[in-house]
Image: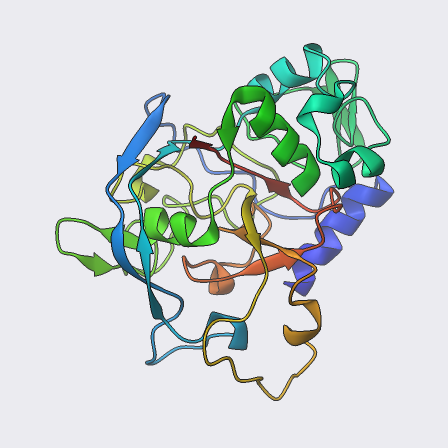
Length: 282
């Protein structure tokens, strides 16, 4: 994760793009609308066994989810532009009290008049790429504008990892096989279209649940039942209750941490990270 932090710091400072591969050319069918998810009992969190897990992922425990509908892709730049052009940043009714107090702009960080800055270059806003560099407050405001909501982290992990045919949990949306460049946009130099990488779809037909852009959830970062600190005590515990959970991984994320149970977390004001979101129906 430290390597990814270097990359978004380069973006903040306007330095040249990192020397990473371009996103793979893996186009897919255009997706729209929501997937229907039946919910039910689900084991949230990392399962004991071989392989590393951070203390905040331990251990899997049962949750009960009501049926819900989730968008098949992350929110795109084109969709978010509708919010901007409708005056979303100027309309108080879309913003929480904390979000309104935080807001100091009229469009996303790094946007300017139909262009966006990607590292040291200004480019036309790519319509089909996911919105990126938005805070949790901005994601929340967009959802109010669109009549939608953010998923909880339990809903997100269920959508990314549960296989309803076998009633089992996968390590990745596509199964338990290790990542390849055809499955998800990871460790790359830029985002890709939200319609790409169809081989990485989840069992519910949701695309790019891993890679491309971190996805904000509605959930506050809290310990799982029975939480025990790892020897690196400052990794998780100091941030419980103040940070929001993100899931999935971005285009710059190393593959070794990009799996369905991994929990990322930042304060809700952070827009410098490679973060976007997807939505659920109310």
